[in-house]
Image (cartoon, rainbow, N blue to C red):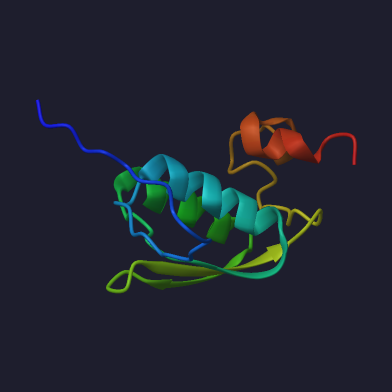
Length: 110
């Protein structure tokens, strides 16, 4: 096995790295951007089936998203604590959005 010796740096530095996209990280970033106040630009978005499901769910809830698949970006206008109501109240499931798991559970207690 080759050994790579890492030398300490003499002074602080600034670098940018690009890592491969991840659908798990992309979905979490989409949710966090929706819960943020204002506009968020997500870069390095991985467009997979799961990601498209999240994008469509956020659009159904009324969030504004601008998608550029070629550049791997999504711009989302977050609404902070104002989670928009779905026109059917629960996607036709009979379950209100506020009682569904994960993301929608954050709304309780606000």
